[in-house]
Length: 112
Image (tube, rainbow, N blue to C red; front, top):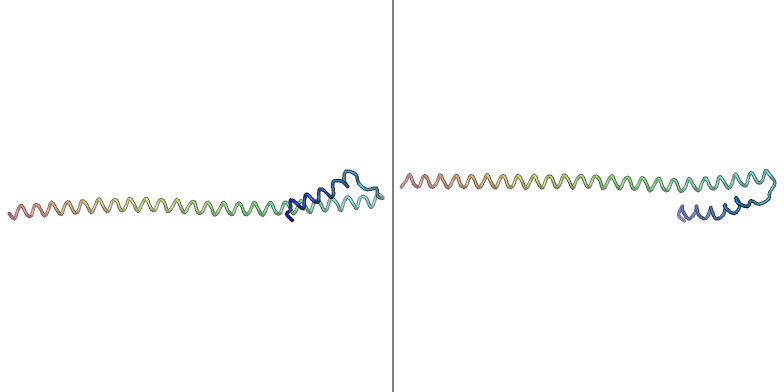
C-alpha cells in the first residue's frame, strides 16, 4: 500500500470519528483523540519521508543528467578542436606539397 493510499485509508477511518466522536468518558475520549492524532501524525511522517526520498532521487537524477550534459559538451568541444586541428594539418600539408612542387619546378627549370 502506498503512503497516499494509507493516508487516505487513515482519513476515511478517522474523519467520521473526529467529526462525530463516540461518547466516552472524558479520560477515554482524550486518550482516543490522542491516539488518533498520533496515528495521523505517523501517517504524515510516512508521507513526508516518502516525498523526501523522491526529492532526493530526483536531485540525484538531475546531478547525473548535469554530469552527462557536461560530458557531452566537453566531447563536442573536443570534436570541434579535433576538426580544427585536422583542417589546420590539412592546410599545412597542402602548403608543404605546393611548396615542394614549386621547388621541384624551379629545379627542373634550372636544370634545363
